Amino acid sequence: MFSIINPFNSAFLAEHQYFTDQQAEAKIAIAHNSFFKWRLNSVDERLNFIKNLKFSLKKNKKSLAEYCTNEMGKPIKQSIAEVEKCGLLCDFYLDNAGTFLKSYKITTDGSESYVTHEPLGVILGVMPWNFPYWQVFRFAIPAIIAGNTVVVKHASNVAGCGKMLEELFIDAGFPEGIYQNLLISGSQVEAVINNPLIKAVSLTGSEKAGASVASAAAKKIKKAVLELGGSNALIVCEDADLNDTIPIAVKARMQNTGQSCIAAKRFLVHNNIYNEFIEKFTSAVKELKSGNPMNEDTDIGPLARKDLAEDVEKQVNKSVAMGAKIVIGGKRNEAFYEPTVLTGVTKDMPVFKEEVFGPAVPVLSFNTFDEAIQLSNATGFGLGVSVFTGNINDIKQKIHLFEEGAVFINAMVKSDPALPFGGVKHSGFGRELAENGIKEFVNVKTVYIK
Image 1 (cartoon, rainbow, N blue to C red):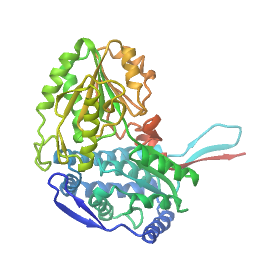
Image 2: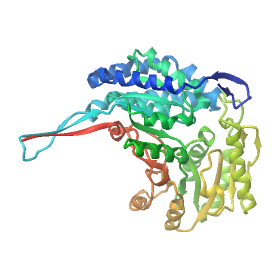
Image 3: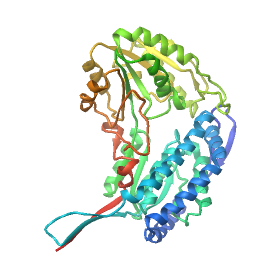
């Protein structure tokens, strides 16, 4: 048994029991048997269930948001926005999945040649706590539309959200076994991957978890998609409009209390505007309201667990001991960590070289854009980068120099259903969302007729 504790007030929320290995195997067998019927449905027939799911999502928006806020501390207005974003993803695939999965002909020396897209079978999703609905939807929805069935091992500290998700699919009328919540511990994941009925796995999580899952999948010659950590740079050029940049920079770092893989975690600001940026940015950060995440005017809630706040505290304190200066913030109270801005940071400090999963940001200066690129690339991660500039055409010529899965100009890095999402280097491999995402778990089958 394990307990779920509200990170805001340490209140007991619920107690859960992990499935036994035998129970997990039974769930997977149900998914496998259901796959053979589900795959025979046309894409349009599958999409009818997605329409129902969107209705269930809207109907249960308030309760879903409250579960999220209570279990991992996300400010309620952000929890609501997350649920709504899941609906936008459904809309995107309702409009485009038929085209993405359509067979197409190729001219060869044969009488007929074409390519089809066929589902693989049961897909395992290993999902994180920071966006407990959005992360699952962007994995599960395209996989299911493509004709697969899925089992989801969700993060234990959002077990209630995991159960709510399964209930959504039931409420939407999906046949048994198309979507199932697999309430197992991390130590049980490898055995699930080893199950011959599991055909592939998608993981969103830490480097350590990604390496473990990828290794287990590789041993069984199974495909894996990994969306891991990030340490995105946010570059502010000398010609950037700070009035436009500052609000975006605040959101890019502080949204979800800094607990996002694509958050802007390292700020790089041109030396000529560095002091002005620091002044305006810290002033804007001071306006953020910390407190009860159930209050609609709260911007900063607790971190999802006390130990996560302690980790951020250690990274900041060690960096300060190495010479960094705290401009604002730097204090922890249980699971709360103050929004924190640091200067005097060097590349060997934890707040620069490690992923900081909380509301703390180092701000460094640069003199040339080439220097900014070098600083941006000076990390093992490669998820995304934001560049703020008044000269877009000049930056467009240098996009290829960034070792990233995404480059956003005059905008924060974000996930969008219409855009492929994923990283390079230690940020993982494979892509979610868009056409790329729906084709990750299909057999691209070539047919040639002489």
